[in-house]
Image (cartoon, rainbow, N blue to C red; front, side, top):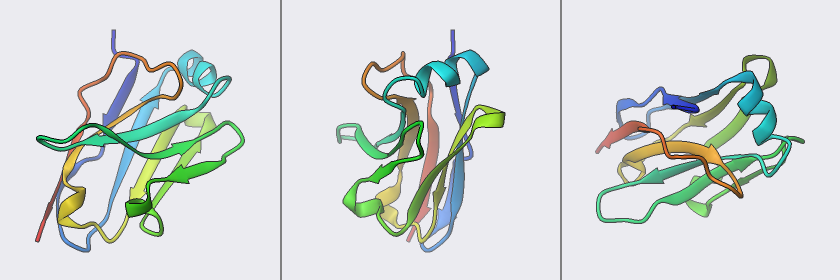
Length: 118
């Protein structure tokens, strides 16, 4: 059973922008933000999955150094959705992006592919 659904990826040129969405059911969204919150992760071929950004119930956010100043994570409680706004994209941002609960991950979804051309 898919519990988190990622969308919004695509092919963009270097310097472009994308907004990723992570949709959850109302009950799952509440469960996530009663604990450690949610993170956006990415994985590119041959590399380990890395945490890119995270957000807590109180909207505290954290970013990997390479994303600071370019990416913004936010959530819409009414829509049970978490977003990742990515600006000034670089070829190194090319990866499959996933969202998941922090602390006690759920089964990983299919993710959404982001490809940034030079």
